[in-house]
Image 1 (cartoon, one colour):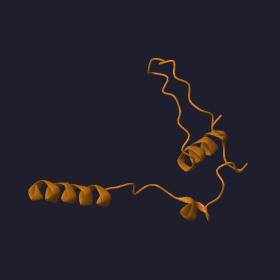
Image 2 (cartoon, one colour; image 1 turned 90 degrees about the horizontal axis):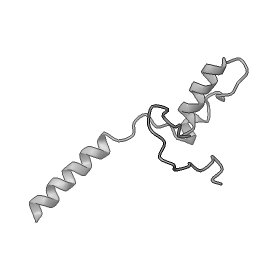
Image 3 (cartoon, rainbow, N blue to C red; image 1 turned 180 degrees about the horizontal axis):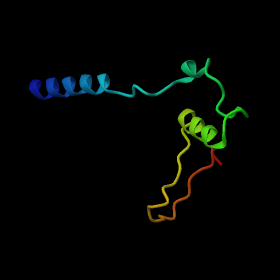
Length: 75
């Protein structure tokens, strides 16, 4: 029992150390420019928007499952 909890604890510590390192929270994004500035091209705006906001996009190569996604406002 003790050995099992020791391994689980070490595994949890390893997962915490390798966690989400590339995630920028609201405080890190505060000083960065907005992704929809008119000086950026449309492709650059889309790229910056995907990097900032976690909006899922459907993969066109996968078959449709008949499940609809909620809108960004949750409706």
